Image (cartoon, rainbow, N blue to C red; front, side, top):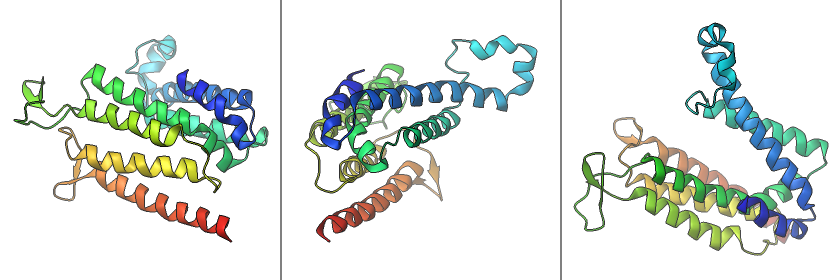
Length: 219
């Protein structure tokens, strides 16, 4: 709700209507929730055949996040095209919403104890899962709030798309930093952190795209 309010206040800066962005967000969230449940059901057909009403269960574990995100993204694209919402200005306008969501994700990690930190002897370590660990969730929330205040709430950039791309670059950079303190990272290729590899790829692609958008403005 906070993200939607912040987005609505800045919609006019990008030539968009607040109501259109609100509807886009709500449709995408519905697609995320419904899509995540149906995607989970498709991968566990035998269980749902035996108990079809479980499709309406409030159990949050019966959810496929990857499938939900994919369907939510498709729903947002289809709605945006039908309503004639320009792609890059819409992403720019939604940047405060995305930045607020990142704060919420960090807070959810803090509440659930997931995304926990490595063991440490530093004085600000916290007791979690039987050891003194880096408060990685606190780092995550602090960085998300910083990015929200620095990028999410700033005035529009001259180049279309630059607002969202700058937010994405900062978020990828924050992920690179945070992964160094995580105690539950997925390791690949003999010890490399998968999260950092993905963050490097996103950061490189985002900076390249951002440079292209800025060059278009200059030309």
